Structure formats: C-alpha cells, structure tokens
Image 1 (tube, rainbow, N blue to C red):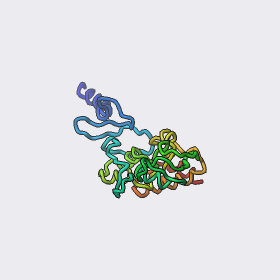
Image 2 (image 1 turned 45 degrees about the horizontal axis):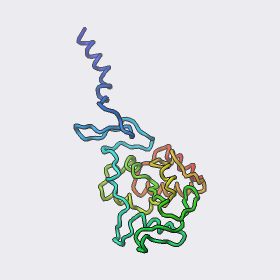
Image 3 (image 1 turned 45 degrees about the vertical axis):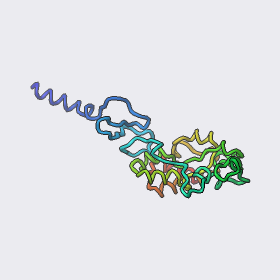
Image 4 (image 1 turned 90 degrees about the vertical axis):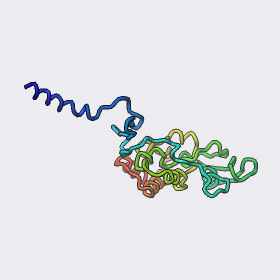
Length: 209
C-alpha cells in the first residue's frame, strides 16, 4: 500500500519536478540552463514570440557599418536618404551628417539637427531575435541590422517610446502613416521569413484599412 501511495505522490509531483528550475525568469519569460547553456522559454512576453535557444544580445547584431568603405556608415546613409533639405556634414567631410531637414514619419514633426534623430529598425532587432532570428549567423544578423528596407530616420524620443514593440503593442501616433508602416513591417518580415503572430496580424490589418 505504501508503495502504491509513493507512486501516486511521485506522479502528482512530476510536472512540478520536470518544469521547475532554480533562479528567476528573464524579461522574455525564459532562462538559460547554467549547466547546458540551453535557453528555455517558459512564458511569452507577447504572442509574437517563438522558442529559441539563445538569449538576445544587441552586440550579436553589428549595426551602423560602412559596407562600401566610403566613410559613410549605415546611419549616415539613411540620414542622407531621408533628408529633404540641404545636407551639412561635420568638419565639411561627407562622413557624418550634422544638419539637414527631416520629417519624422511617426509623428509628422520636422527636424534640422541630425542629433535629434534616431535610425529606427522598423522590425526591432530583439523582436527579430524572438520571432525567428535567434539562430541566424552573425553575418545574417549584420545584414538584417543594416538593411535599408528596415531602417528609417525618426524622432529619437518616439523611437525610445516604441522600443522593441510589435504593431499589436505600439503604433505610430500619426495615423496617416499606418498603411505605410504596416507595408514596411510586412515586407521585412517576409524578406527574412520572420514569424507573425495572430495578434500582430490583426494589428497590421487594422493599420491597412
């Protein structure tokens, strides 16, 4: 009888034994096993997440590189592309942009100082990591981080507000830009075969109306 009772007790406790672990969960709802180095996802921060084996590290996604060795890195090239006025450079060398004219597509605000702008990854790097890019090679992560399709010059304050949120969590305040934002988001996701969650899809459809 005692043996039967012990077996029943073990059976009842098995789920807790199997899924428990020392330490807390990270911001993504997972943790890395210190013995094996394997990342375990226990819960999701958003419905856009997919299981992955490695924790996100921004240093693994090299960005603002100078691929064509013309002294203009990715940031400078996007500032030049999105400029609508007269570009001025630091120390009169065509490397670092200092002045111009930009209209933030997320807010409609106008800027003339390049230092007031961030180059936004439309699909954020950490979001790409969570939705299919975690196991990419460093070369592919570098390609994604510097892909002009996924980059746009925006108000640095609004970029901080957006952070790494998907369309079901954050949308540009300027509603007239919603269709273009949804189009760009889809184009990047499709190009890199990244997962789109049901709630993310619903938000994209809302913006496309």
